Length: 145
Image (cartoon, rainbow, N blue to C red; front, side, top):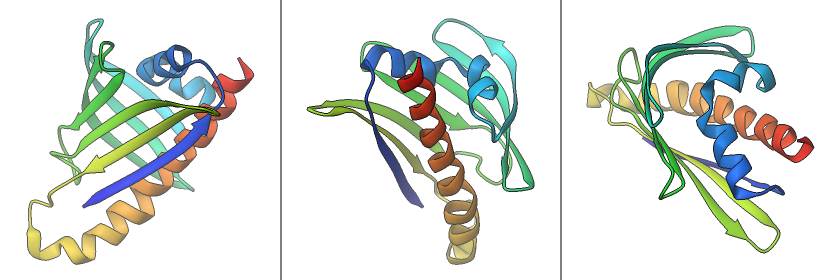
């Protein structure tokens, strides 16, 4: 499964990057996020339990977050549940009219024969929707800052 979401944000690249990297503040400006709990914490690597909603449906997962300030990337690796092994990369590309913020999700389903059934549900219904909501609210937050 390969999914990509992106949005153009009119704010400084560094401000957008720091907002994306600082998970602790996500529930403050991302209304679909229920909580972020740190299990391990350091300046460039964290292990977190993340919880959001897809409409009224609660979802949660555990991720390792790696903050790469030199490459301007925030990377996640899901550590358990349905999305165990999923790689997520946030990238930030300066454009003439703003910064193109992209989130890429890559997952090999552990039971490949179920992929045609799981991809529309896990990928399109949950991941793609939550990522779009995250980018939409991230844009409003950093553009209003």
